[in-house]
Every structure is written in structure tokens, then in C-alpha cells.
Amino acid sequence: MAFQPDSLLKDAAEVIDKRLPISHKERLTVSVSPDHQSLTIDGLNDEEQEVVKEILRKEYGYHGLK
Image (cartoon, rainbow, N blue to C red; front, side, top):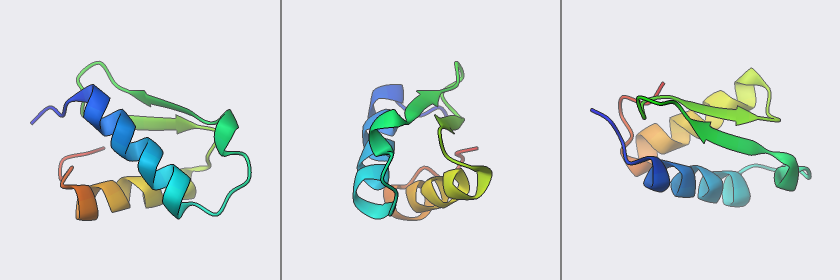
């Protein structure tokens, strides 16, 4: 199932803003793949990206998110 890219970007920004204890949030770049199934957050390491994705899966309903 493809997600709406605008909703996914908005929800990812919300998770980053409210849930990540980092000081460089304004330097992050969030993008959605062309098939709208994958999220990339430039400026976060792999572990931090996976935390954001897991929150989106569990709390926001993006179950097929890669």
C-alpha cells in the first residue's frame, strides 16, 4: 500500500520534532521514495532513522514503511 507523501512527511516531521532528543533538527532533510513506501532522513544515522520509522509504524499506522 502506498502512503500519501504529504501526510508521511508531515507525520515524520512531527515525530522528529517531538520525540528525538537532537539539537540539529533544522538541518535534517526528510524525503519519500517515488513509490511512497520508503522514508529517508538525511542527517540521522541508521539507528535514529529506524527509531523514527518504528514510531511511524506503531503509532501512526504506516505498517509497510521501509
